[in-house]
Image (cartoon, rainbow, N blue to C red; front, side):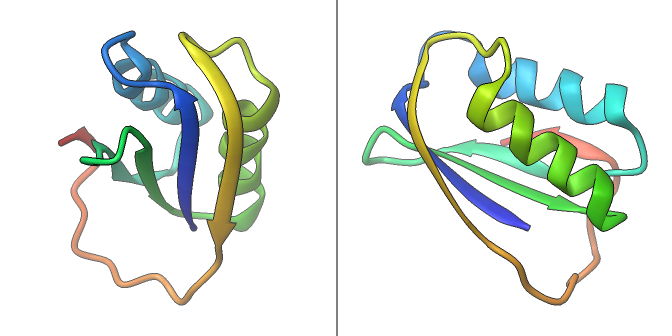
Length: 87
């Protein structure tokens, strides 16, 4: 699952909290990355239910900053991630 999070999500610890939440959910690999246009990209691979839990948190959870919207796509996992990183 790849999600793009819009709003006030840079400079507020959003990537750190996203990583912490992914680790809390468990069995997720991927990363959170600040994009040049102000969004945060989140890539998560793992069991679909756990990816959906992370996506729900991105949309409705107690996130830092202010989320204006989240767009996601689902694709075949590519692998190659070792844990969940902040990039």
